[in-house]
Figure 1 (tube, rainbow over the protein chains, first blue to last red):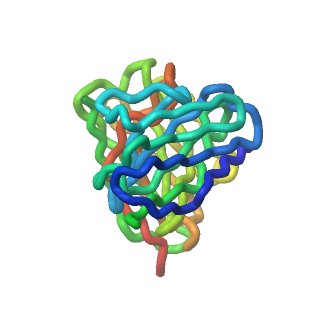
Figure 2: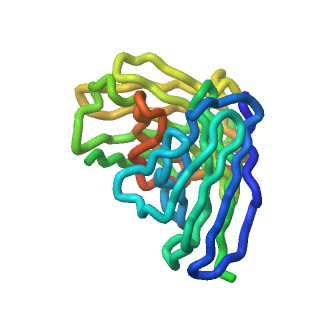
Figure 3: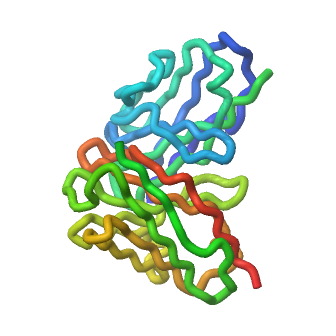
Length: 107
Length: 120
């Protein structure tokens, strides 16, 4: 199985801050990497797929980069509605696997 | 836009079988564009992929659960189902059904999730 390691596990930030979350795969996943946002009590929703493709309707302050084993999700200017938990997920090979999550909290 | 809704018992006894159904609306389940997946999340923990099924009935299952998982699809009812046998407390989780886009390989649409508790 491909292990997905996210860092940090949590981050405290203020509105307007730039936040960067990293995800490292234990093996090459090419660009088959998606990022999801999850709010308490809700299902995850996709932000980024294909490592860098913004899902329709997602604000442009979210961006993704990377390929191979190292990926980043950047929130350029944190908004109040962005306080949530973020997960990466690889789909290069089965079983599909998720990172452990990064909780973005209010500073 | 597709909508998914899980249904099934919220409480299952240890050693019994967990059964969930996902009803799909807003589109046909009989498409090659998507496969239909199950993901779970134990309370306070991360996400675990359980498996996907295509409308043809082809299944893809997490090896960690493979011996206990049975997935099926009913195209006439626009539903797909999950059975997980021999459950233990470790299977207590929120279970989601979701649509997996085969071309872009991500979960695009999710149900609202259902909490299943394994307890006697």
